[in-house]
Amino acid sequence: MKKDIREILITEEELKSKIKELGKKISKHYNGEDLTVICILKGAIVFMAELIKNIDMPIEIDFMDVSSYGNQTISSGVVKIIKDLDSSIEGKNILIVEDIVDSGLTLKYLGEILKSRSPKSIEICSLLDKPEGRKVEMNVKYRGFVVPDVFLVGYGLDYAEKYRNLPYIGILKEEVYLG
Ligand code: IMP
Ligand code: MG
Image 1: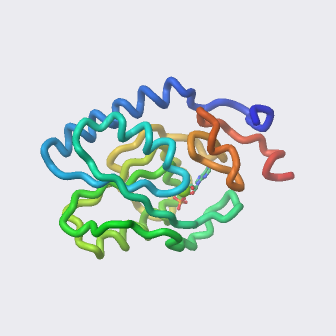
Image 2: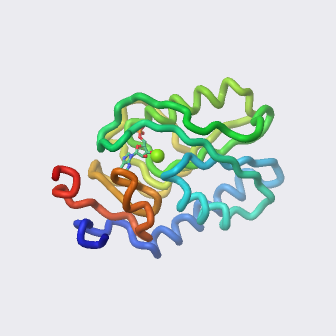
């Protein structure tokens, strides 16, 4: 697996310590209130698992799966709900947890769907932010790292469903996806 990685951009230790910080901020912000953390499958699972261990309050979690990319490395702008939430979010504080915000199209679409279900509040927490790729404006309240416009894998992020299990964020060698 390592042979396909050009460079490690964010190490396991850096990820851990940043996520700890994010967890503290979130705990402080929602102090005493209810919170439902929504994991956007599949990319956010590794981040989500680490993040919730660092949130010091009795939260609920739920999962949603949307597709936007297929096996390509550029956003199609087409987003489809593959798995919806199990529970109602009406009147609840919602924190959407995502692996990376690139064009912003996925979260814009999702945000609109979730808003129409009348939650008390909605915020976004993304491990990575690729501002150069942005096509729509997006307010990411909690973000881990700003990253350059290169294709990344690991810590939940995939290329053609692979590499999600790398414990760090790496830059994939171009020859892997250019063939
Ligand atoms: P957006 O709709 O363009 O913001 O795309 C967000 C989604 O695209 C993320 O949830 C990822 O699944 C995927 N994505 C964007 N950039 C990368 C990357 O560098 N590597 C892997 N997946 C990515
Ligand atoms: Mg994703």
